[in-house]
Image (cartoon, rainbow, N blue to C red):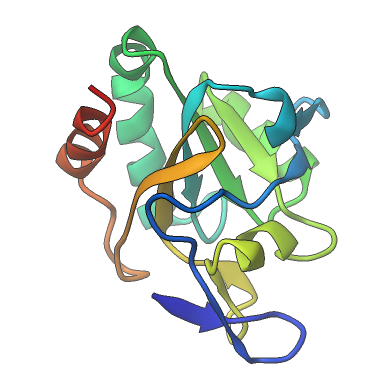
Length: 163
């Protein structure tokens, strides 16, 4: 799936299964820098979503919070990425009681989402795209239209690829 890039409007392809995952260094809701290169062999879901406090995003992230411990039991971390500022994400996480990292792809605006082919130039927001990454490579990816939440069953299908 290809999406427009923020700078040019050209399309940038999403990395596919087996490809090296684009690197990132983003602040979480606490201002801590999360760097992909320091995650080592840890498996994680990188969950791109449009905006904090929006209806579909909120329900989707609440569902991920409900299964966070299940995923952690399989040694898979959840990190959700939006173009919101870290201060917005802190308020969002505190109000919703999220126990996973919310990463701020605020500046340069949407650069990480763009590197994953998950940025919509028209809306200026990330698209609903999820990547399962392990050992620095994309294991699986999936997406949903902007108005629909991704299904938790699809996350479980992706996790099963690791066993």
